[in-house]
Image 1 (cartoon, rainbow, N blue to C red):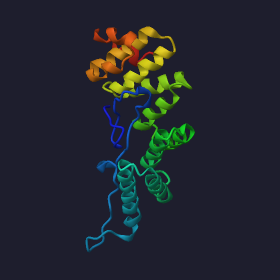
Image 2: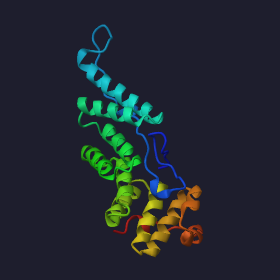
Image 3: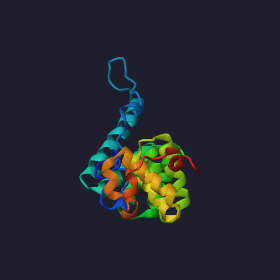
Image 4: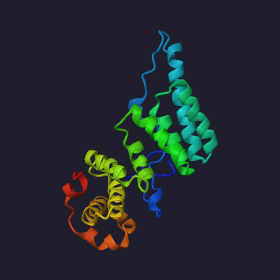
Length: 212
């Protein structure tokens, strides 16, 4: 689950761990609706709204990459005007709101995306980050769901360790940090110093990933 924050394609490990979020999400080719064609080979009138939605989504992503967040917000709102159940538009609005520290707006946007697709990992991850200090128990549940679904989700293990440490569950936190570093050694520098020495030990996956 290595991703970048500047582009909407994944999660990055930065120095400020609390601000690590999943980045901009592009519309995957496999999720693009098939565009119906007429006998002449051109797109049918019914396909035009689909194409417009896709074009607006990609426009918003480019605007976000260029730090035109107001323009990106307008583009994603237009997407939702055409397709209210577009999880990518809701998610990307959440990323913008989270970047601007508009926590309530970000959570609402992620919740919209998750109502459409409850298994949308990037939205789950970012929601867990938002909940990390206000509802740590719920953040732990979400992060464990993520690592259960993707055992190589190193950054999720990192945040799981932080959440467990805040709850005073030191042994579980140590194991989560070990799993994070075992999966991605570059994350060791982001492990709290008091846990860093323990990350060289072999992790025990069931303790950090499945215990509820």
